[in-house]
Image 1 (spheres, rainbow, N blue to C red):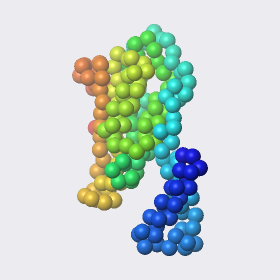
Image 2: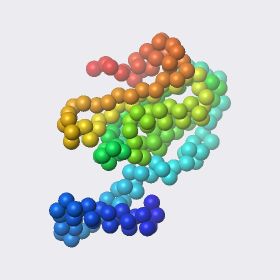
Image 3: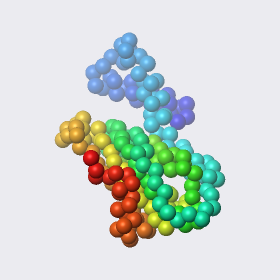
Image 4: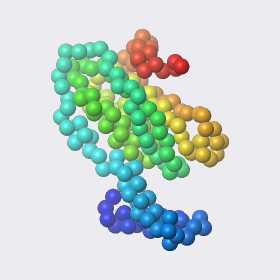
Length: 191
C-alpha cells in the first residue's frame, strides 16, 4: 500500500477503536493504528505479486512423467466475509508433460493467493488453475485444509472444525488410481 493508503488505514483503525468504545490515545493503543496498517500491508501483499516475477523463469524441460507432490505447505489468509484469519495446509501434486517448475515456486504460488482477501474454495481453484496454465501438466491435484476463525470465534463457534477443498484436473480427475496415489502420498484421511 502506498503512503496515503497507509495513513488512511491508520485513521480508519483509530476510528474503529473509538467506535467500539476504546480511547485511541490510551498508552496501549497509541501505536495500534500504525501496527494494524503495517499488518494489513503484509496480509494483502499477494495483490502486488506478479506471477512472472514469482516464477522467475524457473521452468525446466524434463523427461519425467511421474507425480511430483509438495505437501504440508503452511498458509495464512484472511476471510473476505469477516476479515478474520483462516489458516492451514495446502497439498499440491502434478504430473509433468515435459516441463517442471522449481519446487519452491509451488509454495510461493500458494502464498500469493493466500495473501489476499479470500475464500478457501476460490484459493484452491486459483492455485490449481495457475499451475495448470503455467505448466500444462498431464494432471494436477490441489487439496487445501483450513481452520477458519470466522467459524471458531463467532457464529457457530466450533473450535475443532476445519474445511477441506480440492481441485483435480486431468489425470487426477479422470483416473481414480492417480487420485488415490495423491491422497496416499499426503496421508489424507489417515490418523
